Length: 206
Image (tube, rainbow, N blue to C red; front, side):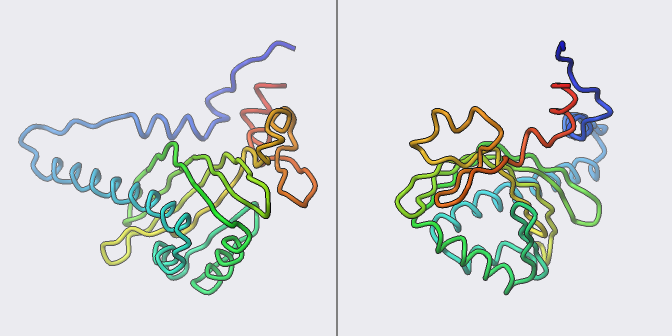
C-alpha cells in the first residue's frame, strides 16, 4: 500500500511547531511587550541550561546536584515506572547509577514551550553511551518534560524517558533493523518505545 503523510489533526507535534515558530512583533514603543519577550528568552535559556546540567550531573554521578534539579514533588518516569518526591528520586537514580559503570549522555535537541503560571513543557532528545557490566550499550532517547519555576529557579516537575533503541555496540549492525531494539545486557530483547507506538507512524505505514 502506498505510504501517505499523517494528517495535521493526528499530530501533536504540528500544534507545537505552529506555536513555537509563530512570532508576535510588538510595536516599537511597547516597552512592556518587549520586556516580556526578554523575560521569555531568559526563561527558555534557563530551562535549556537545566537540561544540559542534568546530563552533567548524571554523567558525573553527582546525586545531590541531580536531585536539586527537581521540584520537591518532582517525578521521574522511565518506561512507565515512576519515582516521585526527593526520596523516591534518590532511590531510582541510585539504582540506575549503580547499574552503569560509566555513562556519557549527548544532548541533540531541546524545545521549550512556556505556559502561564511560571510553568513550561518541552522535549529533549539525545544519544548515550552506557557501560553495563562488560558491555557498552548505545542508546537514543527522548525526554518529555514539565518544568516549574520555584523561587525564581526553573526545575523539573516531571521527566519521562523513552528509548528509540538501546543496543550493545557489538549488536548494532543488526540490532536496529527490527522493532525489538531494547537489548539490555542479561535481558531479553523487547520493543522500543517509539516510533512504532506513535499514531503518526502507524498512520503513515498503514
